[in-house]
Image (cartoon, rainbow, N blue to C red; front, side, top):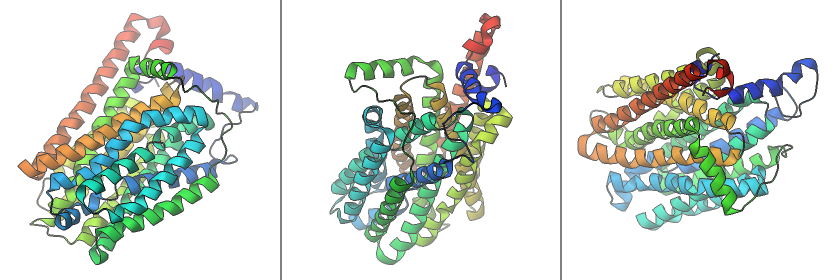
Length: 436
C-alpha cells in the first residue's frame, strides 16, 4: 500500500511493521493482540466505556421534542442540552488528556466516568432549561477524560497492526451507547416522561462504569509525563504543525457536524406530518446505530482493502447518499437514509481517529485530545446549526448543512492526496520515509 493510497505517515507505518515483525520470529512483545492475554477483557471494558460515554452524552437528544413541550422552549433552545454536553467535552478534553499523561489513562478514565454518572443522576431533577444546560455542560466536561485517554491507552497497550480494530471496537461501543440510550429513553419517556428516561440512562451508565473499572487491565507500557504548561503547549504546537494531523482533525469535525445535526433534528421531523410518530417509535429509530457498530468494528479491514484515503471517500460518499435519500417523504426511505448516514459516519470516524493514534510519535493523549476536541466541536456546531437550519428551512435546511460538511471531507482528503504526491515527486528516493 503506497503513501499516495492512504494519505498516512509511512514513517509510522514502517515503525509499526518493525515493531510487529519480531512476532513472526518468536521474540516477545508484551502488548496485547487479538486472541492474546487480556485482549478480550480490555476490549469489553473499553466497549462498556464507549457505551456509557455516548449514552450519557446524548441522553437528551431523542427527548428534545418532549423537553421543548415540558419547558416551553423552541427546538433551537432545547438543542443546547446536547450542544452544552458536547461543547463541555470539546473544551476539557485537552486538559484531561494532560492529566492522563501524568496520572495514567486508567485512573483518569475511571474518575471521569465516576463524575459523569453522578451528574447523570442529578440531571432528571433540573428545574429549568438553564439548570439542565449547566448540568449537561458539567457532564460533558467530566466525560472529556474518556475519549482521548482511551485512544492513548490502546496506542500504548495494543500492537500497531491491531490498533485500528481495537479502536473500532471502542467506537462500536459509542454506537451501541448512542443507540441504546436513545431507544431506552424513547420508550421510557413515552410512559413516564423525559426525566425518568434520563434517570434510567444514568443507572445504566453506573453499571457500565463499575464493570469497566473491574475489567480493564492495568497498563504496562505507560510512562508518566509532565504537567508543566510549557511542555503541554510545545506538544500541542507540534501536533498542530503536522499537516496530516490537521487534516484528520478537520475530517473528524466535519463528519460529526453531519451526524450531530441529523440526529438532533430527526426527532422533530418524525413528530411532524406526514410521519407523526409517537415518542417510543422515534426512539426506536436509533436502532440504526447497530449499523454503526458493524461499520466501525470493520474499519480495519476496510482500510486494508481500500487504503485510508479510499475508506474516507467511501464513508463520505455513503453519508452523502444517505442525506439525499432522507429528503424523500417516505418513512422507509428516510430510515434507509439514516442507515447510510450512520454507516458512513462511523466508518469515517474510526478510520480518522485510529490514524491519529498511529501518526503521533509522542504526546499521544494530546494528539487524540485535539482530535476529540475538533470532533465534539463539530457535534456542537452540527446540533446548533442543524436545529437553526431546520427552524428556518425545514429538513432540507439540515440536509444542506450536512452535504456541505461532507464536501469538506472530500476536499480535505483530495488535498492530502495531492500533497502526498507532490512530496513523493520532490523526493522519489525517500518516498517511504517522508510521504504523508
